[in-house]
Length: 165
Image (tube, rainbow, N blue to C red; front, top):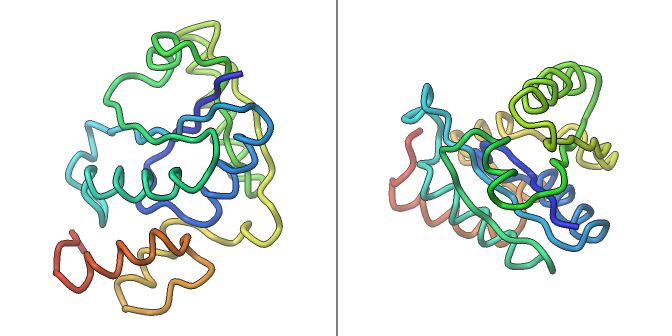
């Protein structure tokens, strides 16, 4: 089964990596895809190419996972790519409310756009990209917050001054 894990991944976190890893183990083939939000094209700490590189690095360590980026509607991307479902990680009640609304919109666009929810592992439930961006901004350690392979790339971007901060 081929599933999609959508997100902004600004940046990819250990929580994201955990969901990608678990979904790959369950379904065999996973694409983690950055969907470009046309209203927020220039916002975020990381440029879209930087996000894609981070996601590619993380997916390279997970059997059955690959990274992609698209400016299509997610339901259209699913339909065109032959995906069976979207997998979304859920940290708590606030995530569920928002994700149910998005799932309903996707089903309205294409009836094949099913969404499956995967609860966060307890050790990753507090991790989110907003907190990681704050750690990066203040040059604090990223251990446990982003995968090791991503931390090295982030460190390189920080030291070279290539982040949008």
